[in-house]
Image (cartoon, rainbow over all chains, first blue to last red; front, side, top):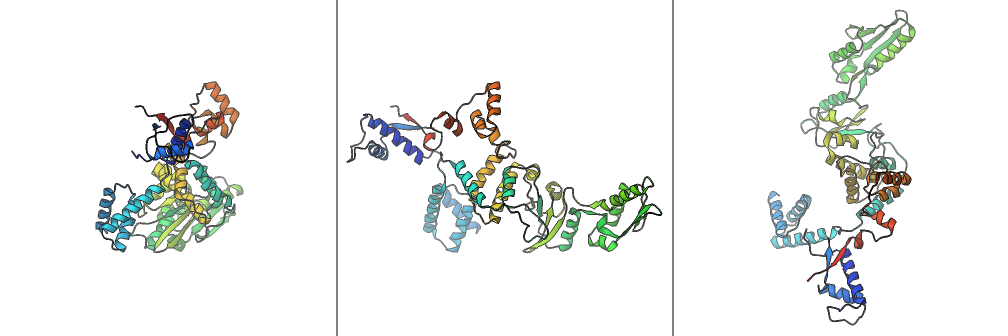
Length: 57
Length: 381
């Protein structure tokens, strides 16, 4: 099944990995919202599908 | 109805949903009952599809743990008591916790094997036919058809008088019985329904042994089957047996080969194959839970049954089955007989690839489950 929908585990893993990058100084790929929390930023990035990370099967 | 089913199949295909057959059937039923038009049917299929997809487990989910808990918790509430089977007179069937343990242990010899024998449409209301079959299956010996029996110490012989009405009652064949008697006791004298036997050595001990032997001679019945009970269930006659021999019973004429079952899972495997054994495990486990008033989602039981039958033969859950045959040394060692497994593995030079849950917990790594089962790589551009 080539479903492009991420499972909740995949979402959590990607947001986690991206938030870590952001917290260590990576440049956000979205306009920063009110919150500066890296997890919030990562979540927004995921929503806009701009996170440069892939799931390895 | 057929038309509606086809229509629903078409709509389902258009929506690119993959439903089991029963779903399509149910949707068609509902469509007919409420007289749905095309748009409404579309909407129905769409919603069913959404609900169906939502009900699926995501990959990475700990289904095994959930299944273990879902079967285990109601198991703690089961009474240890085994009681007599309500409804069928005198037939005793193991139920409750002991039966559940028996199923997951995949015992070769279960404590109360029984069969339910159904008949094909043309015979299922024919009481006479069913009784004949029942007597052919059920065990009877000479003792059951005696009118008179005595041991004559003066003439040193055993005289048995057969009761013809009893024979008729049991729907047995007189010549068959005589043949059996003659085959076993070469020196028997037969005068119509009076049989007399002389012991090989003329002493009282031998005479008494002979008397027992004559009475216990089996004159009809299928191997491994003891008592039979005939019962009217709804609109048909059904035979319940004590003991089980699926192979022999299925060969009999008039027996419904589809519905006739046994509760002996190994016998099902031997006669009908591994898929049937899987179904038998599911059915037996669920029936045992139901009988105690406990409901467990089938999918948990199905997972257990799948694990037990996945590699082609029925395996138990535990040391001698699934847990004992795991690929990883550490996983086996953490279950039972730690020293034995570690020693053997070191002698053979086994390699543990650390792909399972237990291994990774032991060495203190994130486990490959849920979030841990997902790998992340940078997109290369």
